[in-house]
Amino acid sequence: MEPLVSVIMPAYNTEKYIGESIQSVRDQTYANWELLVVDDGSTDKTAEIIREHAAQDCRVKYLFQQNGRQAKARNTGIDNSHGSLIAFLDSDDLWLPEKLDRQLHALDATNADVVYSNGLIIYEPGAIPGATDFPIVAGTIEGSKMLDVLLLQNRIPVQSVLVRREAYRDAGPFDESPQFHGCEDYELWIRLAAHGALFHGLSDKLIKYRRHPAATTHENSKWLKPALRVVSHHIDEGTLDAKTKRNRLRQLYRNVIAALIEEGQLAEAKEFLREFAAWDNAGIVTSLQKLLIKISPGTFNTISRECLYRAEWHLQKLTGKATNN
Image 1 (cartoon, rainbow, N blue to C red):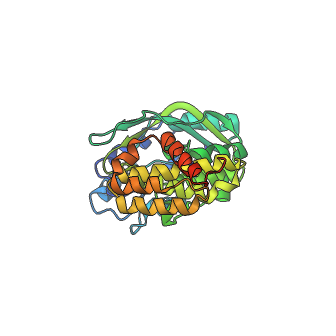
Image 2: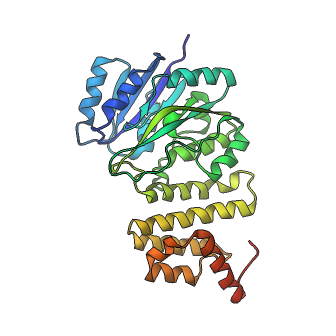
Image 3: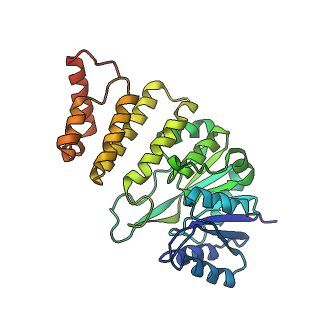
């Protein structure tokens, strides 16, 4: 028998896009699926659109919860699902019609626990243009190796994932902690890898990911801050050497601070700068950075991170505080 795929879709005030997203599931060439759409307390016409699709297709199921964010919505959907396989799609993104078919073939061929794919990133008006595809790692990768890969960068777009329920049960559920909001999927991939799951990445572009002003990730700080918390929480679980781990966290702190400055959140940028200074006992955050962020935030972001690093190192050397890094 063909396995049942439970598709989990959290939804919050996405009346503009959710109809297309649901339809992209209904258009799949693989037919044995159930779509659980979890309305996370929407106040627009999201619920009405979901119910319209549910009335037309019994495989579409409507669930409601008081607003609790994406992690809770995904957990609610999974708790009410029945498939031996679980897939994820956000309510503003799309699947290509052959998405499930191709991934099921890959799952059987590789015996992987998690299959994911590349995709096309599309930019709606008002979104800042950038990359058009994802930095995935293609091929079959065992958990221990994938853990190190993920600690250095999230290589798995959530909209593309198909995971065996047994593997999810071993590593899950999604962590609903506020510090991980926006990166709870990234955190789960790391736990799956730590539990020894076998991953397989497809280079095929089987999803379409929208960037738009209302998206959670429209402001870079909204995903960089939880990414920092995820990596900080798990950084010692892999086999990365001390220098690589330190550099990864430094990079994330600097990116968070730079994003907050660009978004005009100077008070929060200063909080992260103080946290960075307290964490980095090598003294990489110096009075130079503090002065820049105070008197000229634009200069802080204009100077390349490498140049800033070298300037700080030489400043520390002059004061006798430099260390070998």
